[in-house]
Length: 365
Image 1 (tube, rainbow, N blue to C red):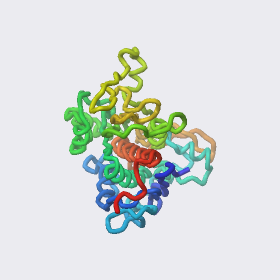
Image 2: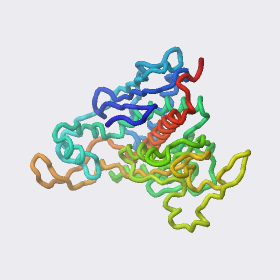
Image 3: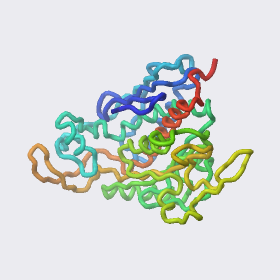
Image 4: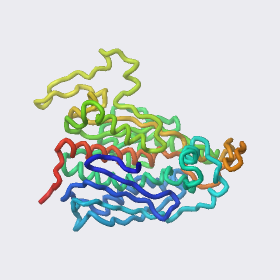
């Protein structure tokens, strides 16, 4: 399916080299202030045109809001946003038809849909599709901010093996990281990562990375105790991004190597209510929010399209062959995908807050 959510629901459509991609956001409360600039700001965050090897296509992100917003406020009806594909070059992909790129979704799409799938630019499995999610995320962020006062941000903690050296950062530090060439809180890491990206591009290769998504304090009680856990829905939403290969909440796998006495977050009274003293668990217990910030890390695999010879199978002949990708490609998908992970987080949080009755159907009268 191409939709996610219960009360706050999005449906995306379109392919990388089609006329357009887009999203319909349903269940949006009426009375939320939303402007074109809100959407444009989020779409621009994924461009990274100042580092050409991260976005050779450098799409202008021309979009149009077709419905659901009047005089700067949401109407309570579905919001449709279309984003035009202006810079697609499909010629590069003709010689790749029926020759799936290793580690790309090409093979899975062929095995499921046969010759009917769109291989141009990766079709619907392209990272281009996430721009539609990011547009929807702009709506979700506005809803969160204006109803329950929650903000969502993210940063890169590692890119191609270049890691930040600090762990004492705040939410504000993470937000400010987006003023740098790469959203990393460590200036030395930024320089090292940019140099690595350029070097990797000259080698015709690619790199992966690790990002972290953080929120401000989330109201307690979001999520259901068993099969509709907030943690599970967040993981599902983030894993729906094609390049994601892992998610860990709080200290994640590091908790598995600790003793309980080291791992447990002590419960203390603060501001007249129970709080976690350290939040090693990432703001979720039993899969539900407990009034703390939510934080989790996301692992992104290297871009499958590279300019090095790779072995594959010509599916039209069922013969082994070798391909070399000659088109434009992002040396790393991690920075763009990180913005998509932010958007998916905001979308899930709005949905669960509405299900918990914290967000009304009409915000302003």
